[in-house]
Length: 271
Image 1 (tube, helix red, strand yellow):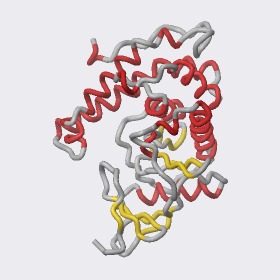
Image 2 (image 1 turned 180 degrees about the vertical axis):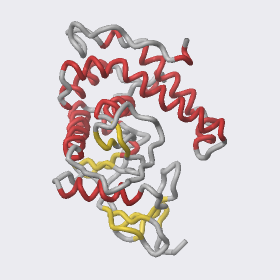
Image 3 (image 1 turned 135 degrees about the vertical axis):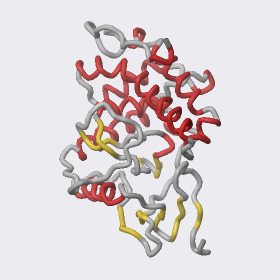
Image 4 (image 1 turned 45 degrees about the vertical axis):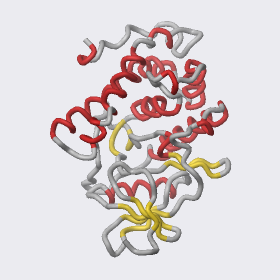
């Protein structure tokens, strides 16, 4: 490693280093499509993403360094309603900006978890560990898992991390319902989308548990290590905790209003 390279913490999959005003990380077959996506976002005025700068002499992808700090694992800076609202606006702005994106011919995406559709190219990892705070500005990092998906699939994952929707008492917010309502109000979900979102929250958490279980069984890293460290158990606990509260989050005083429809069927693992 060059003396000019500064290792950066985080990153379960790739080693990430800073070189001057750039970040270098291992490229993959998906990198050309991801860089085309990032170029599109900046071209249409969405600046809350790193600028891609191609590949370096070692074949690593090069991104513009984003100044600021990541609020994870201490997410206190994201707790105030104003900051949660800023995150919701950021996610909506990204989804609106990506709606007009035309991928390059025969794009290859790093689609780890099967999504529920292909409405947009979704981020798939909207979470506190992929946000940088710089003054009042927010930037989304780690676009390697961008792939076809839907707005609601992305929103459901974001709600898990930013509310958060956690089975751990020490991580739960005393006003989860209010935060949930604030996020979907600021994002601007309509009634039909709110009805669809409520059962999706648990399904999205289950999808992470299932992905880790399958990868661990196959011996794939770093997922096997994460499974051994208890990440799979945490996702299943969060999914069950969320599913038990679905009806609480329905109704005029909560999220969806009247006529929300029946709750989703339980995940097979919880039957």
